[in-house]
Structures are given as structure tokens and as C-alpha cells.
Image 1 (cartoon, rainbow, N blue to C red):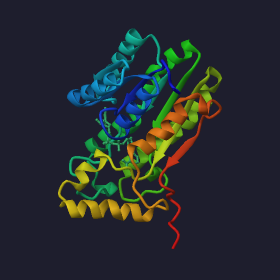
Image 2: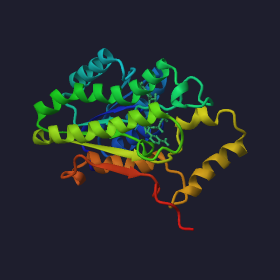
Image 3: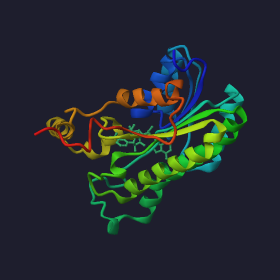
Image 4: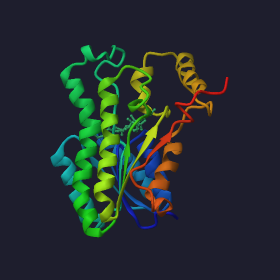
Length: 264
Ligand SMILES: NC(=O)c1ccc[n+]([C@@H]2O[C@H](COP(=O)([O-])OP(=O)(O)OC[C@H]3O[C@@H](n4cnc5c(N)ncnc54)[C@H](O)[C@@H]3O)[C@@H](O)[C@H]2O)c1
């Protein structure tokens, strides 16, 4: 077991990539605090983790709410006595109307605030809250989630891509600052991963159209398939464990080979 008796906080752990990482970490011996917006979904994942024999706490919160984030971190320390790992998967792309153009001229201010709040401010707030405890411990691991779209946008979503580019900057900056405290900070950069992330986008499609949509994505990847939460969980396990003891300030693409083109 690579994470025996470790404690991890996973934001966005109620579904998709976050849930995949929570299950992977629990199987590796890690206790997990699962946080996301929806209380029932979050509790459901915590129950799955307990069924694997690990301790788990569910905490419903908006990561952009600093008071809630601090409460969650205090509760984690009270229950587990430490925070070894923070994984920031909480993030979102679709605004109130995912089918509308996301041209910068058409983005309502509240949609900008919501997307940047979930993706960038949320990552800032959780990092800020766990760092004092990690410094006290003399160790810690932080894994942030950016997106391939931050550097190669496949569509027009300036709020999403700007927030994800911000996560890269924050990862580099904090890795440098926190290295001397034995706190490692890295980021995972997913390409297309099939999760509820796409739910709003494919909501109006027939089953055939939905499969054609994902098949189209698979075709542009050198590995010729869309990724899974498990693909991201493998990279997260590497970064969370001592396998990556000398890795900090890295941004690891989990993209099926993108932005390389498939061989013609
Ligand atoms: N799926 C992809 O293709 C893809 C590609 C590139 C990057 N990413 C990034 O990877 C991460 C995981 O994505 P996913 O595919 O699992 O998405 P998902 O939509 O399946 O899950 C996102 C999770 O984040 C939570 N969340 C979102 N905003 C939140 C907020 N403000 N407060 C608390 N919880 C919040 C949701 O409740 C959910 O649990 C995200 O940061 C996403 O931007 C995903």
C-alpha cells in the first residue's frame, strides 16, 4: 500500500475524477475527507470508502467560500490529527447556459465569478487553509487540477481557461515557496476525461449523438481513446506517494498524447 494511514482531503470528490482518486487512495490505505457541493452525493462516496475499510468524512461546501473551507480543514484536523495530502479536483466549466457561445463579450459577470471562484479561488483557499498544518507537520503534498485547455484551448471558454492557467501559475509559485518546508505542490493537466463534467454539454443529445461526440474526441488523441477517472487517479497516486518524493512544481499531462496529433 502506497498511502498507508495517510489522510487526504479531496475537493470535488463526489463524482468524476475526484471520486476515482478517492477510491484509489482508499484502496492504498488512505483515509479521505470528501468535499463537494452536494451533501447527498458526497456522503455516498464517503460510504463507499468506509466499505473499503477506511475512515471517511463527507463535507458539503462551496470551495469558493473561505469560512466553509476553514471549517472543513479544522474538522479534518480535529478528526484525523493531520493532513498529509490535499487534492483540488473541484472545478467546473459550464455556466448557466452551456449551449451558449462563451465568447468573452457574452460572459455575464456572475458566470465569470462562479467559474473563476470554483477553479482558481477555491484552489487558493484550500491551499491557504492546509499549509499551516502541513508546515507544523514538516511535510505535505498538494495536487492541483489544471486543464490542457489552459495552454491549448479546444473551445472558447476564456473564464475556464484563464482560471486553469492561473492554477498552473499558483502551482509553480507555491512549489518554490513551500519546497523548503518539505511540502510538494504539483498539478495534473487532464485532456478529455469522460465524467459528469460533460453532462450539461451532452444533455440534449440522443445516445447515438453522445457516443459520436466522445468517439470524435477519442479520434484526435494519439492513444485513440477518451480518458477515465482511473487514468487521472494513477497520476494522482504517483504524486501523492513517495514514488514522487523528488518531484515538485511539475505539471503532468494526462491527455492521451494531446496536443500531439495522431499519426496520419
Ligand atoms: N473531464 C475532463 O475532460 C476534464 C478536462 C480537463 C480538466 N478537468 C478538470 O478536472 C477536474 C475534475 O473534473 P471532473 O471531470 O471530475 O468533473 P465533474 O464535473 O465530474 O466533477 C467535478 C466535481 O467538482 C465539484 N465542484 C465543482 N465546483 C465546486 C465548488 N465550487 N465547490 C465544491 N465542489 C465543486 C462537483 O461537485 C464535483 O464533485 C476539474 O477541475 C476539471 O476542471 C476535467
